[in-house]
Image 1 (cartoon, rainbow, N blue to C red):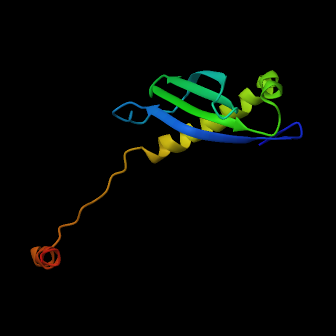
Image 2 (image 1 turned 90 degrees about the vertical axis):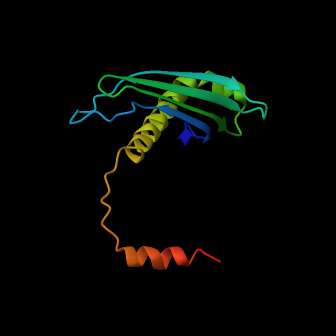
Image 3 (image 1 turned 45 degrees about the vertical axis):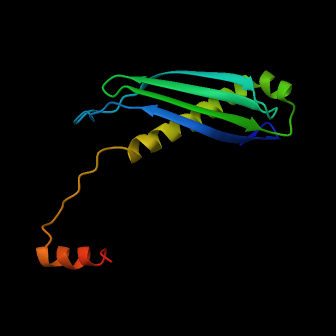
Length: 128
């Protein structure tokens, strides 16, 4: 990520997502999202962040990413530019949430009947 000629690595350490147990049927996913980003200084002297997203509506989701920004720029200078950083972090978090949401949706599979003879052959391979 580059902001105003400053090279910046956005690193992710932890991701937390709590989604509804049951996927709503035939709903248009209209995400009304409350969000916040908190910044802190990490032990490694990087600027850390926690981005929290709370989606409301037909599919309520709690989502958070904790990470840090790595740059050769001084932390104090980055802190002053939080107005530039926050929209970039928010965009990354929203994309990550949508990717994870798609990866965790229910996926139907079909199990075909497997002949007993085949099962006997396969199970004998695991015996000593």
